[in-house]
Image (cartoon, rainbow, N blue to C red; front, side, top):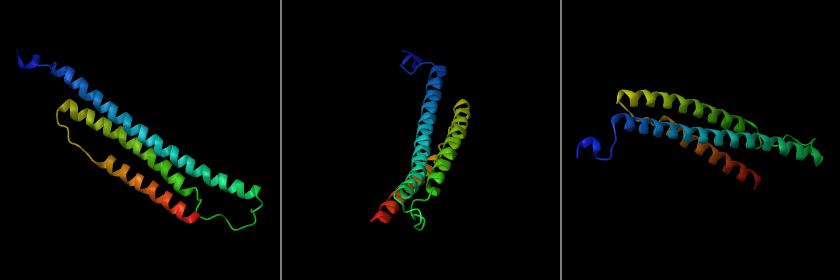
Length: 132
């Protein structure tokens, strides 16, 4: 049996598989960025909901509600959008590296994802502590 026939396929087929893996990774990053943007949207709309409930309950003359700022939601939406753009750029760079057979891993998106989860967790903890 020749080395090319040992179940590995032709170089062109292996290259296609690597490109498809790159595309699946890109789509996973896109799903993650959409999830972060959706969470940011929910956070921002929740602050609007709290203000409306305050108005309905007749507390509109009270000082503005602290802790329910739309700013964290807007930041999360922006973070998700930036993450999606960086994922696309990474996809293009990796595709070029695959074609040139010179792949070099990068951890930028992983660090950004970890920071975003840290930001989400911090926001949730602070929000829950504020309600105590």
